[in-house]
Length: 207
Image 1 (cartoon, rainbow, N blue to C red):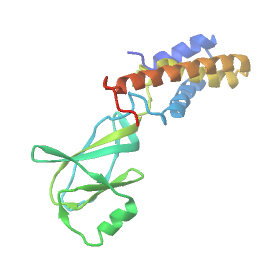
Image 2: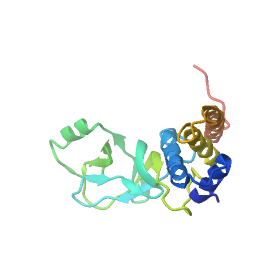
Image 3: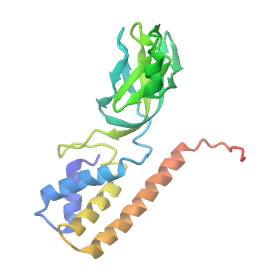
């Protein structure tokens, strides 16, 4: 399983440079930051779990590896007994209006502001909650760290980092453009892979 350090070595080998260690490490992180706003099959629908607390309506939804933070929440579900229920999304303003007449019980609405999720009605006891959506993956720090960006998307990150480094500090725009062309190819490959994994194998009616 390729690691952060493995990609740094690969990029250094591609550059034929041994004196750009800090620049290479940062370029890899910048490459990930450039592409993590796009949904791929490996950075969506991871289940974030928490349990409600009686008389607490707000919860911080962040920093639960492998999730750093959610960029878009698709669905929130809560469990009562052996049954999972899908909660309805509300805007923060609508949620504030809902709380004009406070009530407690099983939550059936949710809203999000930043990383703070609010539930309505006020939970009256512990309810397991699951959150699904598109998220940022916990950042790489140490050389032996690995995540989907160093595995499924390793070539995308490799060429994206090379594009940056050839542009600056090396200042070779021809090589930078060549790396960018490969970066684009890798993006398209991951999009096709993501699309293929989302197909159900069933035809849909055309309207």
